[in-house]
Image (tube, rainbow, N blue to C red):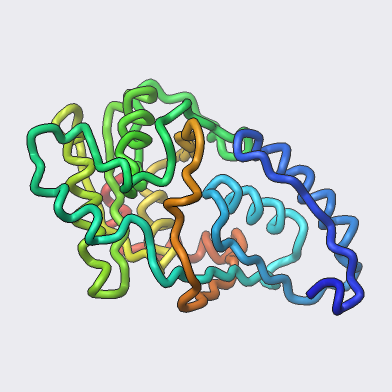
Length: 255
């Protein structure tokens, strides 16, 4: 596509273990590439690791004047793990610390990654971990074990399709071993509404982002195909501040 338009693409390499270096390199590349008068910028985050998504958006927000950024995400036709693969395993209750090997997108956990850009600012002796609970139990258990938070909030995603609703319950069962070890709460957030995540994070004064890194990823277990394509205008700091002020008192009162 770039060749057809007569454009030479700029390549910025991404190392999932060095996201801060990637953010700086991407910011430099965009500053050199973008013209003085900017048009609209579209960012496709499909298939990127989460730390790559966050650093990409951070670099773009630093470089591109708002509100000229739209985030695109292409939904997969088939998401992993598949229901037929994992649902029989739900009946095996003798050892909750194990999950079927086919249900993992990565192999073991190597350690936690805390990017400097999202390292937070306060020094707190009592911490609360807000864990986005997915389908990789080993990484969830690993991050909780290493951080040893005083409080734990499990955040589950709620798909917008009824045929995928089983995934929320499956994630709940995978994370059952984490309950009871410390004060634990849980919330279910719609996967297609980023504002609900902002509202949940705003209940705490300072947020540090932590990524539990695997020893290696398992590409054969990734989702396949392309379904719906979603777009979301990337908000600026003023948009976020206005939204935060409008959060219902019932949510703000939980601080």
